[in-house]
Amino acid sequence: MLFGSLFVFAVLVLAALLPNRNNAASLLSGYNQMAPEEQAAFPLQNYLQFHKRWLLCIAGMFLAIDLLLHFFAPPSWRIGSVLWLFTSLAMMLYQQGARFSAQQKTLYAALSSFLLLLGLGITWLNYRDYQNNEVVITAQKIEILGSYGTSIALADVSRWQLSNNPPALRNKRYGFADDQLKKGVFTATDGQKVRVFLKKGEAPYLYLESKTGEKIWFGLHSAQQKQIAKTLDSLQLPVVD
Image (tube, rainbow, N blue to C red; front, side, top):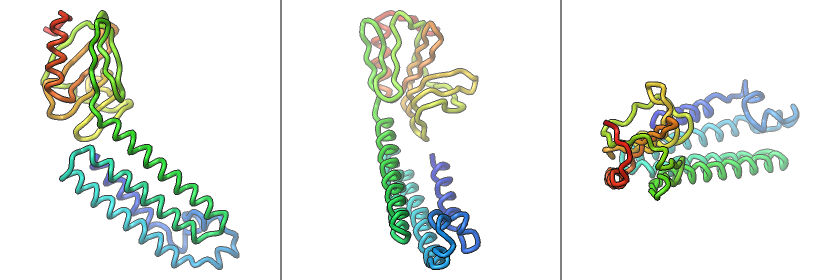
């Protein structure tokens, strides 16, 4: 996830430094839609300085906040840097729109509102993914509640086990992943598709396999996995040798 933050920082810096007087007619949104006479009357140099300062300030503060949260705060707090980034970009667009015509000002206000809503949506999704998934075992099925949850009928469980060695994952098909937490459907390094709910350092992890070949790894809290294992053992489900 830290590499993703560095990538975002680099993109913001490039977006700040690339526009200039020679390429503004192509790269600078709003200005590139003006008629030639409007462009001639527009204070382009002042606007370019404003654009550069805003983006460089946003890029620097985003990276600083993200690094502080990465090293000194719980992983779930890093969603704060995402919300801050989208809020800052929305404010920047709104301020930029004030320098254009009324029509373009309305467009920039709409874009800034969209960015703010997008940031809130992404923050909420990340917050949801950080919440612990509950496992409910009934007489008929095992159900994993929460984000990317699933269920498997007890009659369909072909085997289960507790293991200290979860699968090595190659890539995410869909779901959520950061340095500490992975949820969703992934491809393991051996090519198999697995559904995982794994948090680093919470061994032993619970493995479930269905008769249809679905493979599930669950491990968000070690005590939780041990309790689930006791319940499965009492139900006399097949255990991996």
